[in-house]
Amino acid sequence: MSNNALHDILDSLHKQLASLPSLTPQNIEDLKAIAAEIQATLEKQSPSTGNSPTLSSRISLIVEDFETNHPQLTQTLSTLAERLADMGI
Image (cartoon, rainbow, N blue to C red):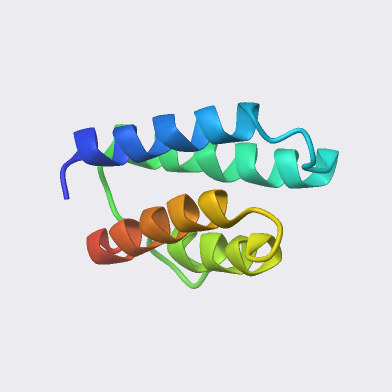
């Protein structure tokens, strides 16, 4: 997947976050932190290394928290996690 496609998914995520008033401040902080880390990783254009959890696995954990109340956001996050996993990030 190209970086442009990932940027499009991130743009979609930002738009969805702006339109979801029912998110808690902690939800918003968690999602913004992940989005910022994804952006930084894309700018470096290198997969993660080391023993720390991958971005895709951390996104998958966040997805579990949103499945019931935010299905559209869940779909976007799932797509993002899959694409990052495909890239080794």
